[in-house]
Image: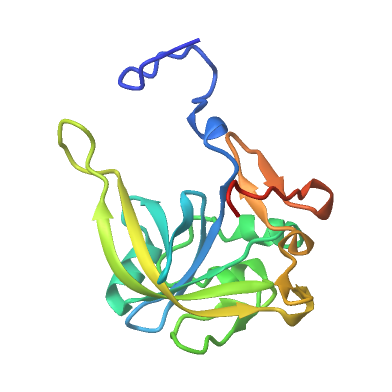
Length: 202
């Protein structure tokens, strides 16, 4: 099949786009407002975009609380969403009113960060402390108001649970991180599905 996205006339019961660009890491973003309000929400349009210096980015549909809080204070944290935390991660996607704490709503504990004010998810095996760099409106072809905003941050601190550092390497598969697919589907990384390939020339 083939269809043009301008009309989206694919004839399927659901848009297949997100089922193709998959699996997508989940940016479990915590942010704090100027008043000290904490927001925690999962974003499936998320990834690392630079290594030196390390940077991450996530895309927000509209100007949600996380984006607003980040622009107010210039900081955020990305905690690793894992299989063991999947239900609580899902609870943090609830459309709560501004100022309501999603961590408390989901029964999660907040752990203090070292270099930024927003807390990390204490139960998460890893977290990235970030300073906000910029927000890029994703303006579509032909112009018009953007419906998504790309938030870019530089990672200034990294937390890793020492239990997952084996022989000097992070055992990512042992953490069992989850990733988003299309529809209501997710994937989970496990030691059984991990494989290694050496790139040509090194």
